[in-house]
Image (cartoon, rainbow over the protein chains, first blue to last red):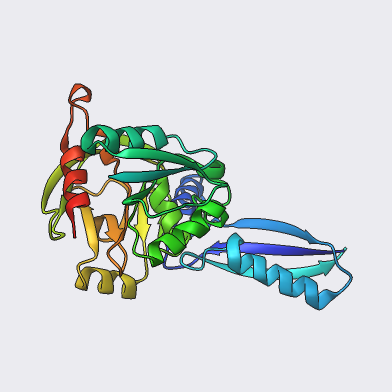
Amino acid sequence: MFVAKIKVKLKSSVLDPQGQTVRKTLNEMGYDIIPDVRIGKYIEVQIDTKDRSEAEKIASEVSQKILVNSVIESQEIEVLEK
Amino acid sequence: MKVIVITFPGSNCDRDLGKAFQSSFGAKVEYLWHKERISGMPDWVLLPGGFSYGDYLRCGAMARFSPAMESLVEYHEKGGRVLGICNGFQILTEAGLLPGALIANKTLKYICKKVEIGSNYPGLEGNYKIPIAHGEGSYFASDNVLEEWEGEGRILVKYSQNPNGSLRDIAGICSVSRRVFGMMPHPERATLEHLGEMDGKIFLQRLVQLS
């Protein structure tokens, strides 16, 4: 069994109002040291195989097909054996 | 006129949209569950507003893998015409039938109000007062797409006062084929006199008359 840990990030060209609101609050709390916050999502996908290369192939396939929208998002995938 | 309205789990404007076409054009309306496929060649296939699949993952992301959507691609290739409103527009972008994406409103608020939209699209020229109701209606696309769509006249409608942060005030666009239309405002909610606003009916009348 493998687990794919997929970090989905909004591309830098895409406005992130959620991140900006959190950044503003942090600045108001006194954290002037924080100039920017970007909020993304984290997805864990379990893949039932013994073959690492198959697990990696499936992880990148499902990211491309549905988990990530390449128009607005980019991803980092890490595949670990469970 | 024969139209098909595709209903996804979580669609909630399907009946409004069907009724609007029925009352405005005397259309024969068929409601198609997302597990079914489109048969024949209706004049229009309509994708309604709502929250298909609970808006999980991203708005419209899951709906595109339904049998109804697969058959919609074939229907479009055979020359069919498609209109997606609100969540329907989000589904069309996720399915790649229209470019770009709809992201969270700049204000982070769900906006439900009447807005003015304007069109320079041949046959649709004019201003219309039409309601919007969305949390994720801010249109985003790459600069190349925006340039091309604007240059080729494929922008359907723009907001007179941008409510949500949409790039270039875009409220709706059409495809290269000019047979797939997507918009965030709800013309079907402005088609009955007793509801106070009729601009949606005028807009839809002009849209269905486009060649």
